[in-house]
Image 1 (cartoon, rainbow, N blue to C red):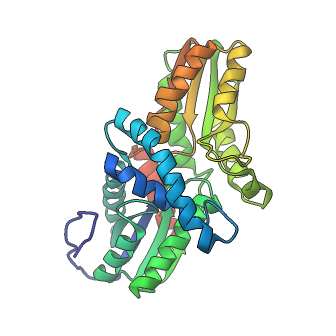
Image 2: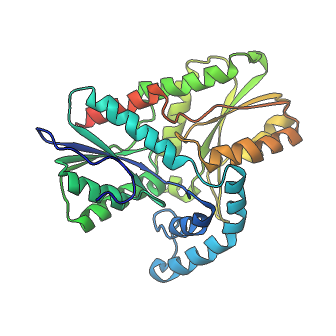
Length: 332
């Protein structure tokens, strides 16, 4: 029985079946889900590292989710009452499965969210039910970070062990310069700036922030993000651009520069047309629909930016789905 994804029952056919698990953070699908979603997030020991975590983490998660729930619930209310990420991931799952089956192979694509449904637990159970012969973990994080990609990999491994299903597993760590991923980003940027005065544009690539301690410990996230931006900018020679990081939580130092502070600086330097590109987000979510479109846009206008534009997330854009297909075929 399929627990959460709602996919149609799988009909067996000849030959071994390859299962592909799309990994992402997930998001609350209703206002009532906001606090339990936050509690799961703050309970992740790979995302938030506390001393004596076995004792301190549950209390920390309960307190922090309670403190932040009201404000975060209001944000979700303002974008329609919940996160669209599950619906978007389902479109990505369906498109990727169709693209893979068109190659003549036997593939089935599953969704494994880290903090909300459908969880990696459900993907593990479904793969066992479908008798998947080999599995591929495909993160919807293009750039490797131990707090996101690494945490999702660990989560999937734990649930596979719990389900008692140990078929061979291949993990795709990252794809910062995959030609079709880069081309998909170029396509979104080009569409936004098509009618703008290029002489007045500044491109600001906003990536999800991470604690500075992860980078100091050797995490490749910043370097891989920079490689993606450099690859995209080869299609826009001469346009001024920069990279910043958003979504900081807590008092510890995070990777600079902060996106809000960077917009303030750019406005003071006279930038009038700002194009924000959510480079590490492949699906629309609270960080794009509210943090960028509502809060950052308002801040930019107050700071003096005359035209605030935002490139859309890739979602199920054909080029992005084709990039995911190529990654899976390469792993096979």
